[in-house]
Length: 375
Image (tube, rainbow, N blue to C red; front, side):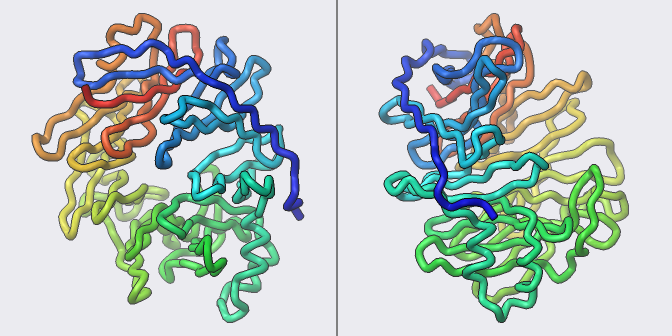
């Protein structure tokens, strides 16, 4: 049983931002390098998410140890967050009121979600909350005795959504941060409890809004299907891209997230190799395939801007912004055209409003985070 009160190392440092560079792609790029990050191969800074005025991510120090960080875009300060166990990988999902929400991996790679109250300096673990607050009327409540871990996947207002693992099967849940009430979300078409090196069966919750929950489930043939769950009617609607595979193991439609009424993700098909991105907006699918790319994934949407990445024939990863209005791609590699240290894997991770965050690798193998904003 994990302890609720654990020591936390929080080191707040003032950051002198790297010089701002302007590029021909129409964006201004600011490099994010945590002062505590190492500067050798496989070290550096990785920016992952945006939560209000904060950028969340990880950095690897000169001892090859990984730490979480929170960067305040207003004060330009970093806060190091080592999580409940300093030698485990921490993934930060968001900041809510005075709390930091995320999950960490234990020494056998199982995730465990937490809420950290910065004022009280107190951890609360979701594995324990599931056992404590879930009503005994839930049909799956007996399974909670065998929880192997949990992972928060999204935050919306006072609600968080995520998954918990039981008997090698994913199960969805929603938790109200104010009322402390849980609701289990398990698609009735999902197959229970089988896993291999490609994936885990069950129900995976990807994102939540006031009205709906979106995610994906795995059927008994190991095919992936997207779904929409209506929070008012408690009904599931399967969401499959028409061109997605119907019989290939671990193929199908992967719902990644949503922005307003628009749902996005990627899919694999029977008539082509690799994967393609998709956008679903009120009954209409739009598929995205970056020209000559093996794989195209959509990772975020803000207004008409669609953020994604693609993999070329050499296996290198590149970022792009797709303008849904003009139907044109902008290759984000152009952002680093004047940066002679850029080497590979320019990966945009998140978009919020006009702000894009992500990471790239320089020619010494060092990771750098970045913020990109339109000129």
